[in-house]
Length: 235
Image (cartoon, rainbow, N blue to C red; front, side):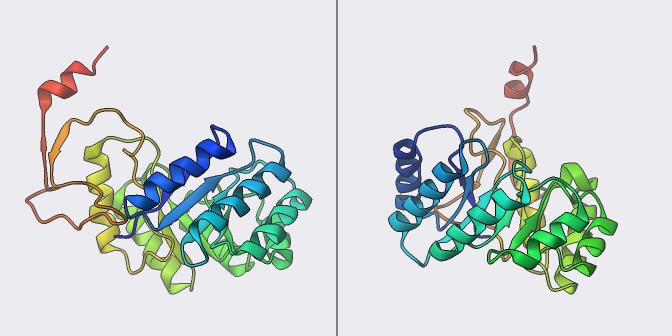
């Protein structure tokens, strides 16, 4: 399953570029830049610098987490489109009509995240042509089964699909990799939940190998759980 790595949002341009270079050297071929925290002019500069460092062929998206107004989102979208952006995720607040208004003017594909909590949200946004795709999370949709159904419906509506996680354990991450293997398509890749964790209560095959997450082959979730390590995390 192709992996999407999150970069930026918590450091300088130089630090972000270093993170990108380290991940790229490890084989990662999909990146999502966190924007909307700094001035949009700095976000544009960072995006263009990452694109220049990666070249034209590497998947590069951006996520504003509802931080912008429509004019600010359009300013970023137009600049990022010139450099090649896969999608711009949830740049404005959850409002279907305003998202449709943005999508009509944006040269960058618009993705929904915070706007998706169930199947009705997907169909409503699709009917308005407000999005080109969406990011799906188990924590918002009610589990793996519901998320896979949402991904199947989104695929039937012609929408691109990405799967995403919050900071979650290696056990939850392996379950998400199983789900990624089951959905019809994963155009917008898989964001793993354990990338930023210092420790994990599971062992087994690597969750990520370079730019991909291998489909599990073992029984169950394909991992061994160290319950003593889990107990050590308790307060």
